[in-house]
Length: 375
View 1 (tube, rainbow, N blue to C red):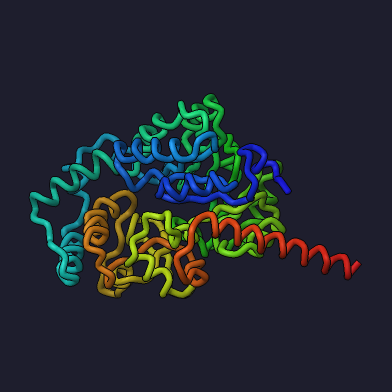
View 2: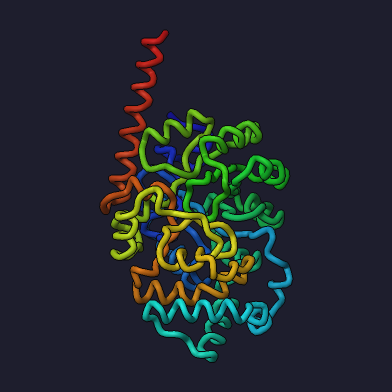
């Protein structure tokens, strides 16, 4: 079996894998799927290192890069200095975060340290269109970089045109059928229907309902199903809805190749599908995360309301860095989808793909036998 979108990228399995870890992306591409490397959590210099590693360890295999074009982030942030951006963060929010930091035994930064951190974050990691463009400049010349994915928002026309000129396809995540028309008008080649149960930035429509609506609205444009994929029979279900492949993410967090720390893996393996929640506390946009201490604090009645993107990231990313450094289990709230309820122990990429495809084949055979008996 090979769908149109699989033929574009010489895929043997209908599995796209979003990951921030180049090891995972390389392993997925090497095992017949398609690895898509996230670019938003690192500096430009670190992304260049990750990109080289991916290219070196997945020779002659296509891969993609995932960037972010937040459609409602005020354009003035592109021109503002770090000091000007900091003035937009209410003192109440800084005090709330300082209290949360100290409450969990982490060091509270001085005013000078905060100023330096914001300077570094705004100049190197702030999620703006221009920052996404810098990362893409490192990608365009790689012949095996064959897909640009917009994780949030319609890609600006200049980036779509540049990708197409370089022979790349362009994909974009959508969380509502109403988003489809704008994406198609912009020239997007693949739509990724991201359902409510998915990890990361996601909408509020369940994938079983969302995917067929996106497929109907997309016409001849291929659609990928995102959200809730941890078993081969779920891939079969997604393709029955009209998707040409699945877009996966959370399932790779538990692999040996992933950069996921042992502490976070334990959190994921101990959690059920009911232990995640969509919250704006991480980026200012709804992101599905495990309901750890960070999320619980922001969801409390006396907590301030999260700031809009990108101010919320400017506020909280320093604490995220400290949480990563000290691995504070009572505070960690990793981004993950509801599939974590189906993840119980460490695996590896090759094993995950093998199990997915074996169950997918068995499911299709069972369906064929069932329909044959019914006929």
